Length: 279
Image 1 (cartoon, one colour):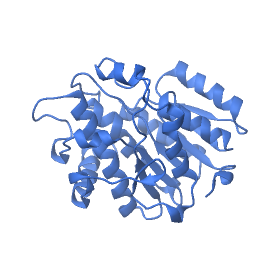
Image 2: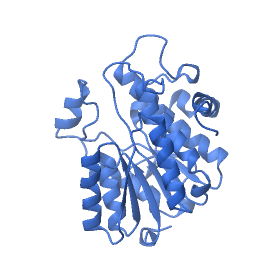
Image 3: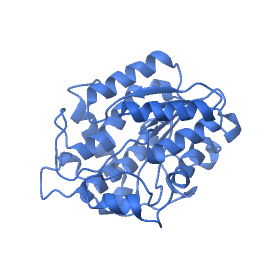
């Protein structure tokens, strides 16, 4: 797939109403793709759909879903399955950072559900539609601050820290893509580090000031460039399960590089939501 071949392709972008997701959705629309923008906030979703309509050649579709609610994710998956026989790209980009340890209505720690479990679930719901397509997970070098334990996804052990929980969720993104590449050989699954980006993430935390006002951080457009490239570059130039930054392979350090941890996370993630879904 090259950048010129997005016409007629269906691209689903989660977390599409702001930051990297919105910039990527606009980039896909400009390249002729049919963009499905998935977002939580209705007003911001209407806004991005309006922008995609203006810049694109194909009418976009806006799909509301709150990744803090697995019922929303399931409904989104059913909607997408009903509309599309094939999805060429799933950009698993939705994410957040939470000041205190809170549980979702599903009983999971909010960071791991929003940043990992919900995307894991949506990808499974769309598994057959993604055959021959690509799964691209937005991660971060913040993974180096995480201490992911597949046996403690809810972070019940030890003291909670927003940065540590966020780092663990970004570890999960890298591991998810790596294991998806092994288990789903007909899907080109990868993850990427967008760099430090000026976004609204971390609202309510000290980090929010850093990400909103630091003039040295990347713009969302620049941050989205590698995502767009991974979706459009020739497949033979991309390593399945790889982690990328600035269109180049980016080394993964420590336990996150281990295939064993990736397999354990996959099994733990599937078990965590197995009471709600059949994976």
